[in-house]
Length: 545
Image 1 (spheres, rainbow, N blue to C red):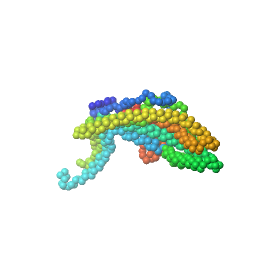
Image 2: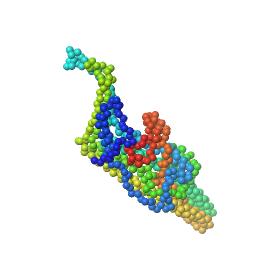
Image 3: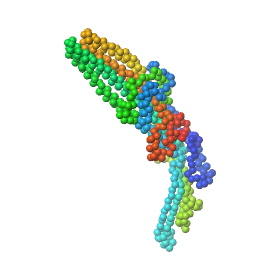
């Protein structure tokens, strides 16, 4: 048996008496019965959780001009200097329904933690009372002269049953719920990371599509002018009808790209409305005030891979999930050992027997007291309990591997985002040169066509190239901030927007308070994240209230 012993109940007050001092048996008997139990109550079977070892790289690869200094990605969207983007993220934080659901899960986990702490005290306690009326038959042997007797019996008192936590079953359950509670806070933070990045990506997609639409409209203007020149040349007898038809075909193809781009733009606006927790008709006014694609900042710090263990909420959540499963393994192991309980009742009992009166119910002489320990030892179901331990052990090992895999995936996401960001910037540089050349080529080709030095096929080719390269440039200019947003999200930034605020709005808390007595749990201090997070779980049985 592996037993991790600590004295007493740290961070817990002594369980209150269910009976009251005046009603207890002599103090020396209580000491003989309870003191050994409390001494053993610090013993907990099962493993004490430690953070699993993980494979973490020393630095990121192919980071280019990115800086390895301290990461400053808490409110990363402000680095784009786009007031519209900043406003949208603030609105999303306040109104997004998925984030509010994640906040309610924090309250749910907090209530479950409080329920688990309650198991450390007498698990069953309450008051009882009864009254019975009995008429005995005239033929009853106890009756004299065949006269029926009547009996009234009244009882009133209190009862309690307390299973002592010898092996840490209840304290391990508190640890599991504590880790689940802290994990729910990290899940809420992870939802904020996802929300802020999704809003930014959707906003950038909208601006990119608007840029593509502008490119198409500009080229439609160029090609419309080309069609006019082709008609002039044809009417002057200098060219054939073929040039006019080729110009008309190219113009129609370019015009046909607009509906597709407009449909994509509408889809992105609808997606943004959901992220903002509003309806699609309210999106356009929020987007007013600018159409440019957000520009990435000149300097970006990415830190080192080990920073992810502290920054990314999903990594911390995976660690706490392993901590919770470790405690549940201890709960399962504790089921293998004898359970000692203290049970007791105190009350008054009176009847009309032997000339007594129910009015004597509260006489001290009519008191009734039962008090004593009981032991339950698993015997015939021992194999079942052992297999439950094995199942929990397998689940614990899975949670360790999941944590290690989460760390690896986090590094992959950062590395992929770094590569995408660096290469997107390289693509923009190359496409800028190509776009300038394409415009010059189109102008030169048209001059030569007017002069009769070339046919319309050359004009057609350069116009197609200009449209393609300008559209590719618009997409590439959008890819730069998109990949940077992905990098910020991979580094774990964005959840800090909630610092200093509650996890759910006041309006929802008001509704919940009207429905249910939440006590003080709706107060932020009673469900907010503790400063030390995981370290607090490791150092104490229960969180600081």
